[in-house]
Image (cartoon, rainbow, N blue to C red; front, side, top):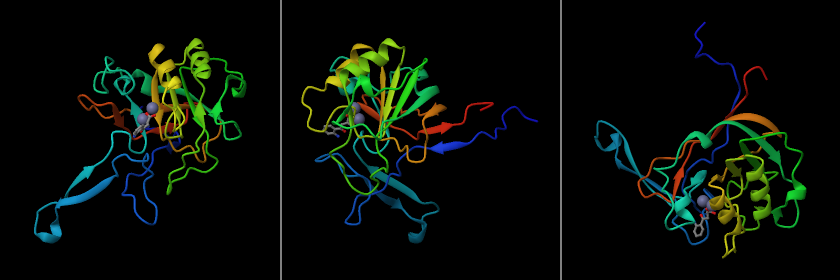
Length: 221
Ligand SMILES: Nc1ccccc1C(=O)C[C@H](N)C(=O)O
Ligand SMILES: [Zn+2]
Ligand SMILES: [Zn+2]
């Protein structure tokens, strides 16, 4: 049998990109560009093919922040190495965390991990903006960096609180040259180890890149 065939289970942990409207739709950071999708050419109108066009923020839906997002002199998303976005990761259930941010005391015992994803929502708010999301303390980022973690992901729209002006968690990430995934959908994903595949789009000058993020069951799990 071909070694490419795999029966390993896959979890799609990406938001569905679609317009925001009265019924809900894609939650967008307050004041940022709404997601829009339209057809430039349609077969209905005699075109041989359908072709679309999108307008969006670089931080729409599930995305990876570039270091350039939080530092003027840091690399854009097209320039960062891809290995942090690919490989074994640990999903931590932080749905019971109170007090606005995940503190060091909220962390379970971590044997070792290169990548850590936090589930903060019991149910992901697919159709409305929730500004009261759970952020991550800068000390927690520091502690994870000491454990060798090179990527931190969250189902929240940011690692810092919505009203933060100091961006302490982002700054801790910058200090340790870690990578960030935001807006993951971790409903139905239990705590444990998985393979992460979440490559951000290669946008020159991009302060972030949208990503189709998935988890895959580890071999021989
Ligand atoms: N769109 C924004 C507009 C203004 C301020 C922040 C945002 C963000 O998207 C935050 C973000 N997702 C982050 O990387 O923390
Ligand atoms: Zn972001
Ligand atoms: Zn961010």
